[in-house]
Structure formats: structure tokens, C-alpha cells
Amino acid sequence: MADPRGESRVRLKHAVRRHRALSREGLLERLFERLFRGLVYTQIWEDPEIDLEALALGPDCHVVAIASGGCNVLSYLTADPAKITAVDLSLAHVALNRLKLTAARRLPTWQAFYRFFGAADDPANIDAYDRLIAPYLDVESRLYWQGRSLHQGGRRRISIFARNAYRHGVLGRFIGVSHVAARLYGVDLRQLLTARSIEEQRRFFETMLAPLFDKPAVRWATANRLSLYGLGIPPAQYEALAGGSDMRTVLRSRVERLACGFSLDDNYFAWQAFGRSYAGEANGPLPPYLRREHFHAVRSRANRVEVMNRSITEYLASCPDASRDRYILLDAQDWMTDDQLDALWRQITRTAKPGARVIFRTAAEPSLLTGRLDPDLLGRWHYEETLSRELTDRDRSAIYGGFHLYVLEG
Image (cartoon, rainbow, N blue to C red; front, side, top):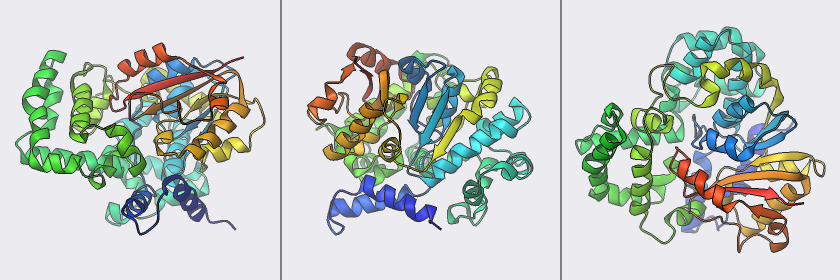
């Protein structure tokens, strides 16, 4: 019988490793690979409403998406696509997506669903898991959530939903460390959330946040690749994010946009970054899948989603020609070599129906395809440059340099 964990590790190794094991880059890649074996994102950091605008989903669409934390996959259900196939190299992310989907089907009310994944800090969630969710989970996901972890002090992994799940995972712990570091310099990041206007948000950034980037410890951390692994930035993506500039300057700009580029009334990403939770009330800013008005749609359509531990290239290689409509690549291409890009887009182009759409994000501002992807493959696709730039400007997560939309011609 195949070992799912072993197979998952092999897939992750092929995605991350580029250099010799004993080289500096090779050691960094292996450390990043180990971090990514566990839970990285409890919330996905791509704006689902920007995705939905670009995807223009119809009732016949078969969507292929990288799963990550599952927020966007479930949010796409609000647009009523025919089917979603979500793939991820991380077994933890696969288990999280399946947990959310099973909970949507089995929890009795929106209030119970919001308590579990919105508040995510109530002991009642564990009882709900044991009684209403676990009996209906697949075996692998149930073993994951009921397994015990050193990160959880020997408690079952599902216990994070009684202890603010958004403080867990690699990114959640990184945000926590950032809060501690800021407090050592006398700054409480949560104070940003008391601002009552964008002007007040900007004043907080300029007087409290911006000076932090000049502190010696922050200068060291932003120059150290290892310290940025908590943001999910792999070695291959570091240079793309820096783009030849000082990393401290780049990150300062991204934090500025997150802190004061959008109203706190609308930006749940800012609440997660500066408050380590959602707004604390069910009518605050939330991802679409968690909103009360969408609960019945998500619940009734959850069985349209399949979640697989595969690379997206591997999955597409098993699909028939001209059989898929929409593709969501997140920022995965930033990790890829030119050969891996060609392999991925060869499968996308083969499986895409006429008019198919592909969206992805990049750490740097420009699309990475020009000059790297096989020109014959790239020539099949039209880059919606103007719309991509507009959607980049409106992406509330604010952490990426570019959002990109390609449409299959003919």
C-alpha cells in the first residue's frame, strides 16, 4: 500500500530542490521543504474577490486550483461553477480543505460554521468536530487532525480550532513573532485596528510602523532569507521579490499598502496581519465563504469540490484534451525552473477549452512568462495587461507585486 506522506514528500522535493544538497542554496531549499511538510497557511493570502472578477466563472466551468488554505476554493463556490479540482503538495493543506468542505456539509448552522472557521477559538469546536465532522472525513484527513504534534504540545492537531487557528501554521507563528518584535520596540501592531479612517491608518504607519524598518534587528531579518521563510517565501522566490532592490524597502512598501491602502471596514487581510484574527464580529470583513449570506450556497455546492495531493502539472497530465476552463496557480510559478514552467503550460494549453482563463500572482510586478516560457506556448494566450494591472491595484492582500490574467485565444 502506498505511503501518502512519502509520496507527498517526493512531490514537494521535486518542486523545491534546485541545487546540490551541500551547497548553501541547497541547504536553504531543504530547510524550506521541511517547513512546508506541515501546515503553512490557515488562511490563504490571495484576494478571492479579485480572483472571481478575473475568472468570470460560468455554470459549466471546471476550475483547477492550487488549494493552499482553502478559503478561495470555497469562496469560488459562491459563483456556482460546475466543478472544482483543488490540488496541493502539502498533505496538511489537503486535510484543511477537506475539513472545511466536510464542515460546510455537516455543521448545522452558519453560526456553527463561523464559530469553527471565523472565530476558530472555541472549545465547542472540538466537540463539533468529534460528533459532526470526524465521522464523515476521509481516513487520511481524520488521521491528520486527530494526530498529535510537538507544535501543539502533544495535543491533537484539531485543537488549534479551540486556540485561535490563525495563530498556528508557519505563517501564523511568523506573524506572532513579528508582533513580539514590534512590542520590543514599543509598538503594539493591534493599535492600527483602532483607526477610524484611511488617514488615521496612514498616520499610524508613518509614525509607528515605518520607523521599525530602520531598526537593526529588522534590517538584519529582512536581509536574511531564512528569517523570511515564515512568510512562505522559498529560496527561488526571494530574488524575484527583491527584484534587484533592497528587501527591506520592498517589504516596507508591501506593509504600507496592507496597513493603509484599503479601509479596515473592507480588508480582512489587515485584520489578520495586525490583529491575528478576523474583526471579532460576524458582520466584519470576511472572505466570501464565511459570510452568512453565502453559507447555504457553499453548503449545497461543497460536493462539487475534489481535493488531491498532487502537483498541478501532474494532475493536468491525467486530464483529457480541452476539458478544463479555469486555472488558479497562486504564486507557484515563482518557484519553478524554465523547464517546469514549460511542462506546466504545455499541460494547461492541452487541457484548456477555447476561452479558458489562467490567473496567477508574482512576487515581482511583471509577468514572469515573457522571456521564459516557450514562445510557441505563450503565443496561444492573450495577456490581459490592463485588467491585470487594475486588479493588482485592488488586491487587498497587498503582498504581491503583480496579478496576471491570461485568456486562451481561438
